[in-house]
Image (cartoon, rainbow, N blue to C red):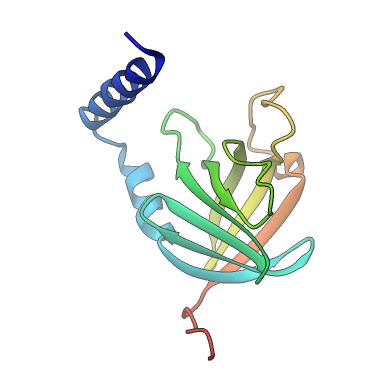
Length: 150
């Protein structure tokens, strides 16, 4: 069997396995709460996040953005989000395929993300509930997506 066919088979097998298991209630509720357009700030200033389904698009400026597909592990005590970069704004997309690990929480109408892994290497230690472990913290409020002006 060719490598490509083996890869497709493994992907289909994994998809059917995941489809057979019901997601825990917290994970499902969190995915629903995350949906929408969020504006806020982080270490480098203003930014936004658009979440639709399991797609997350992070924008720092019109010319700096990442498009990701995310999962929320259900076997962790801490609310984690693992985002795999599928597109970015660079001319030579060096981060495609890298996984960014973040912790998150909802607090008084705010969505807070703490970046745990900035995609240099796989996590050396398990993620704990210590927000001091986060290298960068972002805070967002739900907002209305503005149509681009012509």
